[in-house]
Image (tube, rainbow over all chains, first blue to last red; front, side, top):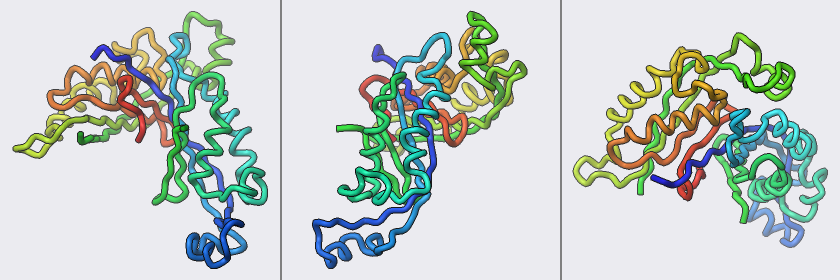
Length: 139
Length: 141
């Protein structure tokens, strides 16, 4: 049991957004077959919950892996502000060419948060509904 | 390998204050968590044990035993207590979610009679938690 004890900080955030699952590389029939009602032309929405986990050493002076106020500000600026109450494929540039599935959303949010300076981003987990969740921990 | 998780909840109060820092620095770093009389949370603790099920009982660890260990080591020590003043293991430490989770890990690890402690996840609220696990065992949920 000489292995080091790791500590990770987990935090959950929420935003509401609409999306439409539709690929320009597929025919209308294929889109309908693959994505079903998620391909309906005007899109639909979800209340997304984003769970992020960061690792790092616990600062002996503060007892923290990362300052929560700083983390909240970082996530708000990079994810919540640009995504909340938006249409993902219409208003978030990366999703003009990438289908905004929650798998791809995990990867995009991971990219946006991995430069947080105080701790290392380990994983992004998104609950699209209370029954569906997706997790990305980097490649 | 099979992973067994048990959850308990306890209510406790705490405050964040580092006597080595000035009042202004404490306020800047810890914000309202620095309020002198403290505040409280309903903590939820998930304890995960890893092991192979016993061929006779089919259990990784008898849940009754785990329940008793959690009652003795955690509930009796922390439930309805002020973490800064009443939990000896936290003396001199800021009782952040990270530090409380670490203390819980240290209390539980030597007490698990079968299997091994795999992960401690402590929720301070539904939106904030800390995970502890040994190097290389992974923190994925």
